[in-house]
Length: 275
Image (cartoon, rainbow, N blue to C red; front, side, top):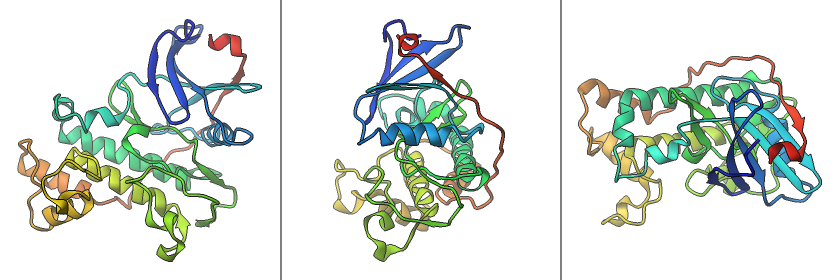
């Protein structure tokens, strides 16, 4: 399927991703998990989570391999990779080529995917690792939420849940995941991460920036709050009045997210098929 793992697409916290193709020629992404917790909790989480979903803004799980310690996940292929490369690299024009209208559409698409996970599934899914690296873009730059290794399922759709350890990536983790004194853990923890990601999309920089001139600008949310408050986002790209208004509104989460539901399909594969 991967031609002996010839083309490597990327490296993540849980393993490597390779480009492959099904027997009908359709391209796929094969994620080979290298480090597993205990009995393979990350793998089980991802299969269980994505196996329950089917939404235009959620990456599709096409199959998986589970043979001893060899475990892999097979996804639909996203030709434009992750959102991350389009918002941080100041040496190329990827961000400006997308344009503010497309970035706004991407933000809305991610919100729709999150709304589906939280309210549209029979099993409520908390992602716990929403960030640009985990947002994949298809050929039309439509976003799809991926990487459910840290996800937690709630069968009875409780609004509050409990977890045994902190989940997520620094810079995106909601305060309540660090300390219960900030409140209970709920779907709003994902919304917090989404908001942090939106601010990165608007500002074109990471939330915690150590290379700035003034210490007051190190923590991006503090910096952008002052900019929005005084109607000066300080962005380097030229924008029309309409785009400026759109950019300002994108820094706030949208309560009117839409969702869609249909039945998923995935299959168990033999290890030899992956190679």
